[in-house]
Amino acid sequence: MRKTRSTPFLDRAEWDFTKIQDHELTEAAVWEYGRTCEDFRKTAVALLETVVDGLTIRQRLGLHIKNPEDLSVFPILTKIIGELCSLKKVPRPVLESILAIFEIMATSGRADFPAPWTAVKRRERELLEPDNSPLLEIHSLLTEQNICDKIRQNAISAPKNYFGLIDDTFVMVIKRNGKVERLISEFSKWVRKEAKKEHPRKLGQPAHAPTHPLKCLSAYRLNQAGFTFSQAQDFIHQHYDSSRLVPLFAEASGWSDALRFARQKIKNLAST
Image (cartoon, one colour):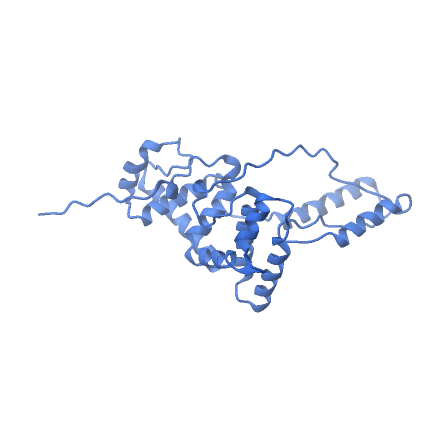
């Protein structure tokens, strides 16, 4: 007698990302891919459980979450990360990815990595007042020496940490006899060049919607749990959300593409 194959099961928090708001998508993807990659997850958790002066890094992040004015965790992290980099125990790209997780924990009030994003209690972010201050301030040392000295001193003495580097300070030399139009043009080129360093684009890659990584990860998690394409579609069809984050596809090729995307992203994370 032929045995009937039982339908697989996967906890809803592992595949259903529909409750994640648009403003959370990027952070949630970093968090969820991080906890999906086994090697990365183990390294991050081990660092979180490192004890310094009687408290773990996780506990210190928890104190910062409860009291944002408590910044004691940051110099400790800076020291530990510096030591790990010098000893080359953990590749620098891995540390940078882990720090991204820690930053999410510190800023969104989540101290429970690697628990599922949708299962973690979090502090609601305070609504920030719009910053209407000018983007560019130019002060002349000839007429505003006190202001210039104060700016330079702040730039020198301000604490640097991995979670909020101070704004870069530049010295500008302007030729007085140059045309204003050329000056504006050259300054514009320089600003764009600096911006690309902070937000580099990878050319030749197709653009994806912000929901795409998590949608693919949802398909990957279901596939890892034993769901075939048809079984997954039957299992999740009742949660249809206009194909925003639920991995419903008209064709099996869409499912295969999603699995390929997620596998590559996890592979990249594991090899960093």
